[in-house]
Length: 172
Image 1 (tube, rainbow, N blue to C red):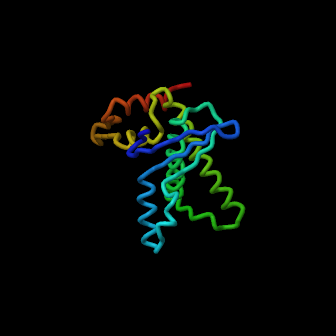
Image 2 (image 1 turned 90 degrees about the vertical axis):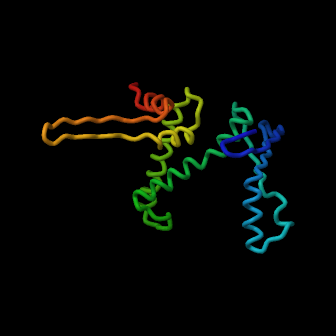
Image 3 (image 1 turned 180 degrees about the vertical axis):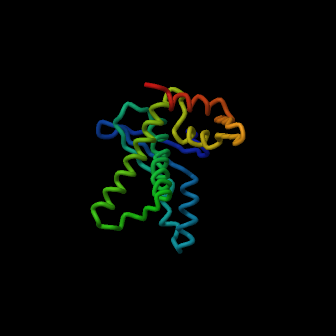
């Protein structure tokens, strides 16, 4: 199966009322071997590099489950970006108010991503793809101080960007 920028190989096995997926990703294996060898590891330590096991019992097919699994880092990247913008540190503080603030920010980031995924579901693209597309758009604001004339325009470079914008900002 081909995911964005990578090939993964999947075998599905029925297990405990659900499915167990054995996923092999050669890119993960290569990166893991390099890191392991750099740290003095041996071939015996590399036996299962690149393999992941995913158990699921939902209505999704194998491709959908693997895609969701590999796209989970969208949420993690969003949390990192939010923490960077707000100047939050790692949660190594035991003050209750700090931990609560961190959890609230994580919840808001996840809620925003979930809403985006819901709104664009009719397009058949992932949140990762949508965010990558939206990065390319920009807004132009011009103001003539003498006449007071103001002009504002959102410039989309691709038609998909307009579709995403219309779905995200639709009323109701």
